[in-house]
Length: 184
Image (cartoon, rainbow, N blue to C red; front, side, top):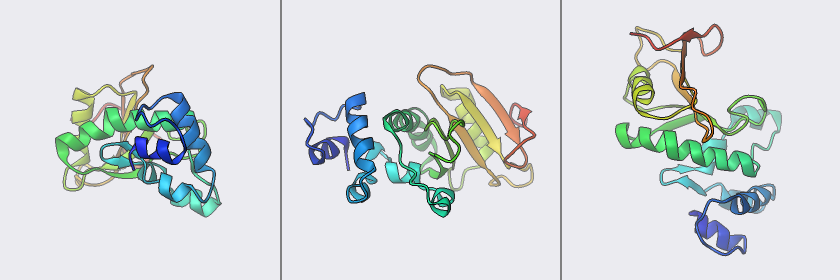
């Protein structure tokens, strides 16, 4: 579903413009269990849907309705446009393993600013290096990566329109300790 279709569904003027008003209306509608299934098909960018960026087995297990507010929705859209779409254009289909996590409200995932992902068939280190060298991002982490297993782990990347620290880290476990930079 494109934004214009969602706007029509929500009885808004269909202009396909991702402004605060549209995001607020979509976010409010997502709290309605009857409207939610259709709105989860909403495209945040040409290749990424709201469903992909909000799916969470942990939230489901905890009984958390993992739906974004307007600010988080706009942050997820920014992440899709500035990080996930360019990665897809360069390497092919991207598998998002974690996006929004309402159960970690102080993290960039909790703010809708980060996603964990991988590109099937492409080494995570290759993807991480390309992001580091090419894109504007806030934080990039090569997580649970092992030198002997090119496809081990995943790439974590965050983006914000107001900040691009270009922080680059790696961890062999997916949690602390973190080390600066990517492997040589």
